[in-house]
Amino acid sequence: MPATFFIVGENALTERGLLQRMIREGHEVGSHTYTHPNLATVGKTQTLFELNTTQRLFQAFTGRTLKLFRAPFFGDAEPTTADEILPVWDAQNRGYISVGLHVDSEDWQRPGVQAIINNVLSRIASAPAACNDTSESQCSRNVVLLHDSGGDRSQTVAALPILIDTLRAHGYRFVAVSELAGLSWDMVQGTNLQHALMLASRHLARHPDAEPVVMVVTDGEPTAHLLADGSAWFDWPTHPETLAVTMAEVERITRRGATINVFMLDDEPGLVRFVDSVAKRNGGRVFTSDADRLGEYVVSDYIRARKGPRASA
Image (tube, rainbow, N blue to C red):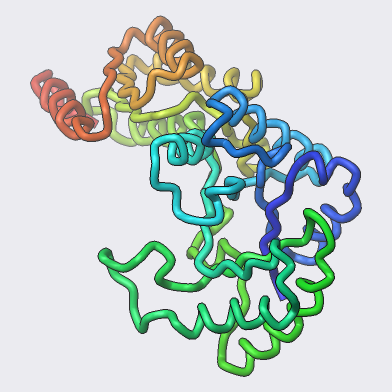
């Protein structure tokens, strides 16, 4: 039966074999930070440290990348206040998919095996027949939270096979988070501008009569690129190799005589530095816009390009 484990980095530091077993058995693994702090109280610098340190540890131990994230404390519910939402936003900007929960077993309180079973089954049974935009955030009851660390978890271990057998008997099927959400890990995590520029270059080559304008919309600096075998490789902070191959595509498009106009949705210093280097090399324009006005800016730039002697690409 597949499960999705969210690891605390400092706990995983001495559990390389266990991490590799999770991967070998087909489970999914996500980040639960490195030291399990309340991210609503620590600030952006600490949040990014927590994400990056756990990511690097997991990559070193397994050769794979963490793509899922669950925040401690308020990750046990839907974040609602600004100090809760911002860490989730920071994680999303680094390519993570944040995962909440629908059913809290409350096993962390060690209430007894039967209480854990009752908590899960009663909350699943109380789910409405359908969910819509006006439903409560935990409407679907599809994600059940259980703990495998943080103290004596013998009650959880004892309750788990009973829960599995009971839910299966009622027709439930167990899947990992990615399948539940309809995600495919063929998609590229992070910002793979290198690949996007490669595709743009091919498009321009197929349409030599078009106005050579490439419009880039981004909220983060490049964090992914294609390897020689065609697979995508992700790392954060931006790896020098990712930066180098992305700038090589900027150079290739520039030699074609194409203009790269960049629409920035964030003013993060790394993104600003990168976009500035693109503009200096290519000579294109840079726009700073929020998401609400992005369409207005893009359409205006598109119309401006069409006023040239040729139709815009």
